[in-house]
Image 1: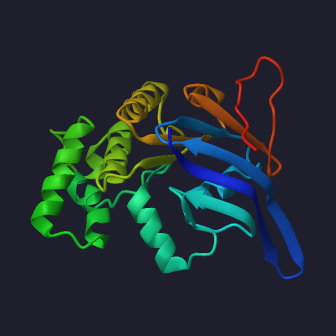
Image 2: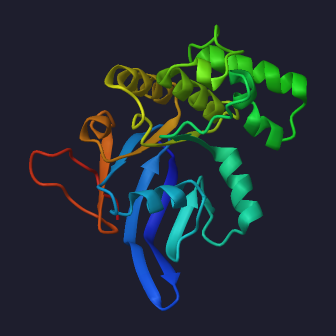
Length: 235
């Protein structure tokens, strides 16, 4: 199976005046096309920084990162946005929906930035909402939807551009347990359909649903004690 992500000795240092904080301290791993991987760690572990680099929302301070064979470490903001929009769909803990717009208008947003014609945008948005089980909610605004339904709208928005990778940051963090199981089931279904799925989480139950768990602590990849989820380290 083709390799879609590779990081080699990636570091990230944040500087404020004379103060430097190393958020990542030499991270090396790879992810294959179609894999389902969780990145797990406590608050302050570096997993959010890692997520931002994986999603091309930030670049490493050192080391190299390849996404679908392209070295993205030295790209400028415009090029990063093109790579990001072409490959990655984002799902966040807070749904980040526009309260005044119906579901289909929220879903079409990435297609607006892509310059797609309005009629085609609406058709694609409604079709994608149908794929996530919301065919009867396309005209509902976020305030008229449950938390689980709002997250399904957010997942539809992530899918509408047909990305090869879904990057989900604490996707169940704002949901009750029943809705959380529902959303994790939907994400697993998308993975079985061929998409690479990367879930960032601090929750062991969420992480354990993945084929592989990458553990992060203090900016490093770490091996968990015996009995914990097994991670396959590369590098």
